[in-house]
Length: 217
Image (cartoon, rainbow, N blue to C red; front, side, top):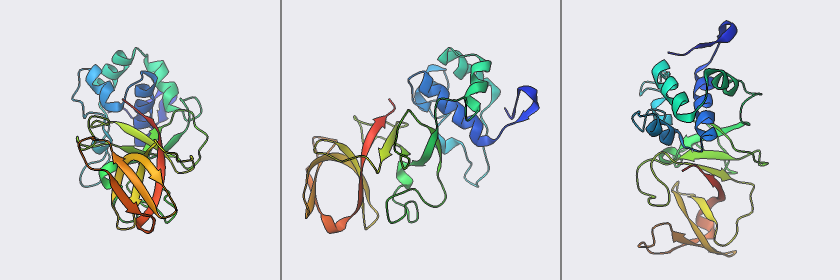
């Protein structure tokens, strides 16, 4: 397992995984896309694999890191720079699996990340200090979003007609859709799957709505 870099620097679990996220981003891939290109199981670098069911940290193997570097065309020296917070590819944002986004305590009353379960994701350049990431699991949002895709959600970005958004209801349901229309009384949402019926929510049902500003593919 990789726990050290040059000069005997002791690295943390989060630093190694964040560096792998940054490596995938440099290659224009999601973590699962990087794993596939490296000839590994597509779930090797997924966030769900980074902590065991009993809460223990799971580290990537040196073999998997070496294969990822080869797939991304990067050297170990470059990987070492990605580990460093200041020398990496920008700041990180809180990340949570989409399936966990409806859990009690995952967000505060303002729709900002709160509580346990959040990890980190290396962020493309952005000005929103409250932005967070969600990882798609399963194929419920296919074909627009696939298993392992990362979506960046910006609570501070203006929401306009035609934007893809994440909506959380006061009952705890989290949904992804295209905003068709928004009034003082209701939200009209168009499902990502055109075969599904459009949906209208009363404004009083909505805890928060935020715009999806970036997606890894």
